[in-house]
Length: 297
Length: 281
Image (cartoon, rainbow over all chains, first blue to last red; front, side, top):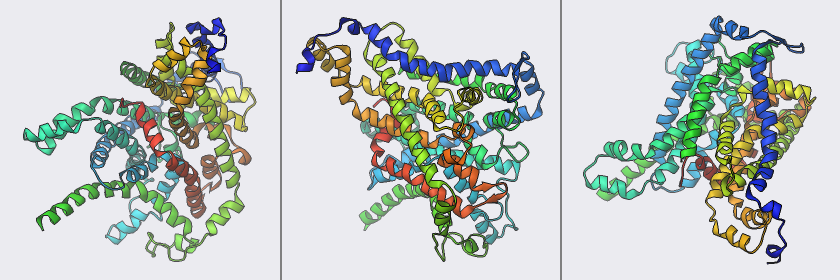
């Protein structure tokens, strides 16, 4: 135990000083690469700033431009529809997945590992597979639909505005469902089985046990997972960028992809930053809610 | 007989829903594999049953490995993911230890700040970051992404490790302190070795997140030689309106395998990390 009896350096032992010395490097890093860009983004959104040119302060002009731009409102409504429906599907499907998995059966751990694959595999790679599944000429779905009597060439999954939105929602759900399911499963497993047994003895049906025992006990986890999912679906970028680029006719553009197009495509950094920042009010509310909730736990 | 039927019914009740979720989860991967093995004549023939391969060939894999820089992209992806994960574990641990184990004024506020930063999505930051990276002259270097990925991974690792650190009993450290060890020695020699599972959880999670990152890589890495797999695949196997479907699917599968493999070794840790944020066991 020689190490434990070394003479101690008293200044290191003062708890606060030690804590702050330890915190300083990572906090400085986050300040430089999150805090500074965040503030700089706000400054950019108030500038007319074409790429590779100095910015000119224009006040709220970019935001006025956004609010008068019909595409901006289309993007806003797309983002809310996408987030709302995908989250609902993930919540319902995830609950189903968790309940299905919360039984005793063989190879359970293997099944759980396999079910998580869509969540593990880089989104871009699985999205490319989906793109091919939904290809206008060679869609595997359409191959079957045509043989079932649907007129050629079958539905244009990514070419029709409504179907394109439905497609990105389904793919987002496909990817996010395991996260919901496996997290809820972990929650289910903390519920003591006696509670079910008591409810069963008292004559509760399967649905009643689900509704009055399981759901109330799962509620805190369900809330946290939902907030997580909403935040990251709301700010989603890569799925839409790869699959539709926001098309057809802006039908699937989200805040993130539209901001990207304005800033990186059209070179309007200020305007792009203002579109990205338009996400902030909704995000800030969600983040504040989730942060407070996580703290209380 | 009745018992037998009950057993079948129970098996059906278990496996029909599970089977449904399995097919749903796996179909796109099956489709990648099947497509990547088809010769072009079969790939673009709508008269043939698409779910099967009649004349399997490795041509698309050979083309992918010889005509593109796929191996270089894979190497870049691994390098970036490992470096970003390492930075994030060190910084995350440095944040988590004082916040979880020590008492000092301001701890609550910092913890809340870390949680909030974790939840700030990249699309909120990418435009100013692009400008910042340009000014630092880091465009088209792997450093650009090695430096920016930890912005999302550090708060995540910190949060996960905090949860883990709190589960370690305080007595061990107190005993060490009474024996005269400094804070540093207590942390380094007593505490951290006990937390290896927590670091593995955070590490494997951070690693998969880094592999998955797209937006920063898309903006910062525009030269073939520095690209990561997701960017390389999107930028170079889709040229205008021409999709190299066979190679795309081969790349998607080959790109997914390393992540899936590493994940499979650490599934339990991964699941522990996944659920740690929201479930208190």
